[in-house]
Image (tube, rainbow, N blue to C red; front, side):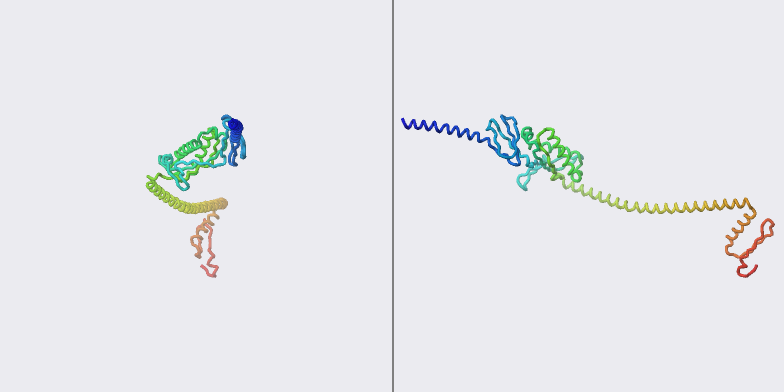
Amino acid sequence: MEPKKDYTKLIKIIVPVIIIAVIAIYFLTGFYRVEPAEVGLVKRFGEYQKQVGPGLHYHLPYPIESIVIVNVSELRKKEIGFQTISPGRYSSRENEALMLTGDGNIVYAEAVIQYFISDAEKFAFNLKSDEDIVKSYASSALREEVAAVTVDEILTVSRNAIALRTADRVQQELNELGVGIQVKNVYLQEVSPPQQVIAAFDDVNSAKQDREQFIYKAEEYKNEIIPKAEGQANEVLNEAEAYARSKVLKAQGESSRFTSILKEYINAPRVTKTRLYLETVDKVLGESEKIITTNSEDLLKFFDITGYKGGGSQ
């Protein structure tokens, strides 16, 4: 009977110890650590209670309380049109990458959207799957932006602008949902014609480049010829204006001279008439040495004494 009593005593000792140990272990499960890049969200019976920062913390054991850890510093990304298998290895997803442009062409576009968690509470409790919602909105926004431009624009000047507008669209949608996600960037890492039509597309591009080159040469020739022609036209115009001014000045001079002669003629008609006659003869005969006389009683007698300058006579 003594061994049985000893066993009973041992059971009475061990069972409480085990119970105490189990209870202790149960309560010890409430300890948790939050890393520097994380925040902890404490829930009590499934209801959010508070947010805690980095460090060692304690919450009442499950199912009374539980903790949700959210990394708010990690830069996350989603891929559109391709999938990363391993570093340096990718697989294409044409059903995601092929998109229709505004002018009816098709382009192959691969994009990456980068984002981070800006509000841990909203992210943890308002969003079921960040991958599904972010990628879905990004793909839809990108298709709408591609459909708003031509194939030439997306392959050249509009590439960065499309990426920026896509990021803005996605951010607006996420803000309306209130899921605590902040979009950092959208990258169009590859935009090209589909492989099936790339040869024909290259031919079209080559023809466009030739056309642009011809236009450039024509513009260059125009820019060279027009200033030259304008210079010549200005020169002719200036000469014409100078000629016109000289004619006007000459006419004004003749008019003034005529007015002056008219006044003299009115005051002394006979003398003025004789003077004009002699001036005209002088212009016509030049340096000829002449003696002019007249028997007319209406005119004054005139003797040219030019010949006497050298000592001769007529």
